[in-house]
Length: 306
Length: 246
Image (cartoon, rainbow over all chains, first blue to last red):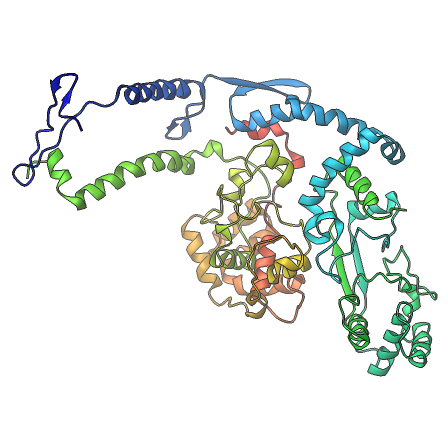
């Protein structure tokens, strides 16, 4: 602090501590002072325009208004963030651009969307965001889940409930309940072992062929009744959401992660013993028809849609 | 002692007290009126206090500090609306003590996470978040599935919340008022005298943690998460209706 400013002696605050300790009373810097005055003026203008001061049971609403459309009528209200959001959704530049595309997509058939590169690009870009917010928690970013055995991989071309756009749309809209009963109490260990050998025989050539043959009998027997859902050819039924056991794709038993034949058998046996219960929630209440359509096209495109 | 500038400056204790008063005025003026201005609380159907099981889950949510990373307040911005769903209403947290608003999000906002994922997903995700979301930085909470739920204090907790204004009922008159306001089914759940029975019945009614035979902390937490943001049916209201409360 300068003792001299503009040639004048600087005043002290007049306090003295410890007998002689004093404090200069320098004037505030001019720029700071004017910024402070400007803030005060800004605040007063703000109070007049926007909702600000609480008054007991109410508050000052401000004189600025905002107009949006509701059910074909124009509604004018005091400015507030909720009205601003409605207005932005109706007439904001980004919203209008997006709406033009969304209207086009909602009118178009799946085939038309896929054939139009402009629409496909839009769908992929917007659906990627939707997928990230709503689907990726289970199915993983890009449709490939983190672990085999929990949620279906959408990146491969194996489908549990069908891979046509209609199937995918129905799955998203209404959800699915995947269910396989537990056979741990119905079948004994030898039977379960035989079944596991049979199921693995489609993808592994080192299984015990005698056990596999015995397993096939159990598979097709009334006692176990595996074929009711998985069919006699073990290829699965879309209507039941039952897995195709003949391909090398595993959606429940973590066979690819198992080391050695014994571990693979154990993984399959675990599924037979404990059964499967998986749920995909219904999205019709949360997502709009157009959003479901976008996601359907996106998921269909992820892994060989049918 | 004469009260003067000097007397404040040389008395640290007095200065601290006066500084605190000066600073809190700003916060109090901003927040306190919101509790008393009825017209900013939207009149909507469906919002009810938590059931005993959900309330227990909420207490675990608070205990584990979930609020440090997750807010429960969707703001009225286009990007938030598109990501999380409808912005939160004041009415939706009217029975929350303490409320879970906030703007610091390390994890996503949870105001509308209810019914978004399956119970099974929540169990797996709370146990080991990276097993379903590899890029997640959320810690594992495996003990939720191991700890039996201690619900012996649920009635006391509801009594305490009643003091803050949550309409849990103790008397027949209060119960009847709840029947009027929320319907019989909800009113039964809000009855403090039957808190334990209701808690057990709800835990039995749905498979929250994947094992119906055991009542764990996971059951309560998942029951709570699944109800978040689901109480108001937004299809019943015009968007402009909510703007009238601002």
